[in-house]
Image (cartoon, rainbow, N blue to C red; front, side, top):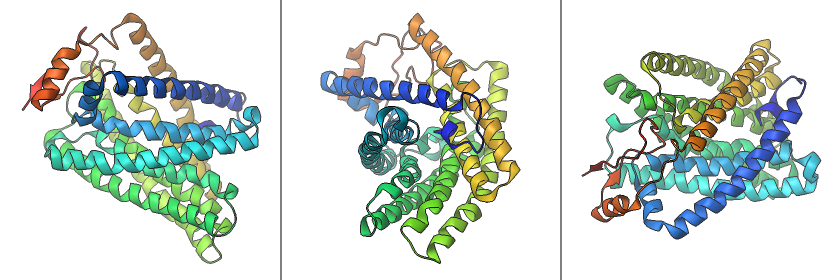
Length: 365
């Protein structure tokens, strides 16, 4: 999606995007089947993940994955599948991802703040994961506005996407304030958690992308002056938030470098280096199209190069960790079942650390 949005055309750009879309589509199918099988065969363990104070937030990645594969199908997959099939698949994936995102945005924070009575000292970047999907729905829904039937259906879709935009922005601002407070009071935490601070960049970049792509199609459903106002809103909102995103990227980079000096063990949290940077690429590209400024054009290209390099590094380390058996070690489910039956949660996962050969379960009352 980031490749397709770039304001300039590079050699091999579309071919790379098609390869990435193919891999993403295959992974989506594989992980959907695996997740369904896991819930069917190991319901207690799966429910323990959903109730875990750390793991539960990453359920927000599921609807975001569905939404981004759908968007990629529409912008990259249509030469292979055909325009009609690509759009129909995007509609299906957008609907499923939007419903899933609304569920995570509503249920995970409720579990976190009501059932677990979580404190601000436990906040980390992953708290944003459940509330970002509505922003992804808003930006990817803009691709479907031209295909919606002219009239009430198109207007409903556009306004619904703006409602999703507002939901995601306001919820993200609350979470970012909590995360900022935690950083001030508790510091960035252990090294293995440092990559998750990059997640904060995700809603910032995604909201700028959504505001601009929705503004670009507003004239298809709304008359003047509302369409012009919404298009201008994309720039008026986007530029200041883009600036704050730069500030946060600097803070996250500083915390990451300081952690790397003393040892930054590889874990799946390293994927936090990729998606947030991807949203910054799409945000810069959208602002470049609406303003024509070289600042945003150069930022989009430079960050895209960093995104590809980071993705290759993290992907290779993930494959090596999987192949060696260190990344996904066999887990004895009996302790997990015992913990679930006693009403306490597991707080250490392979997601957070692969420095140990076996997962240690630490019950907390």
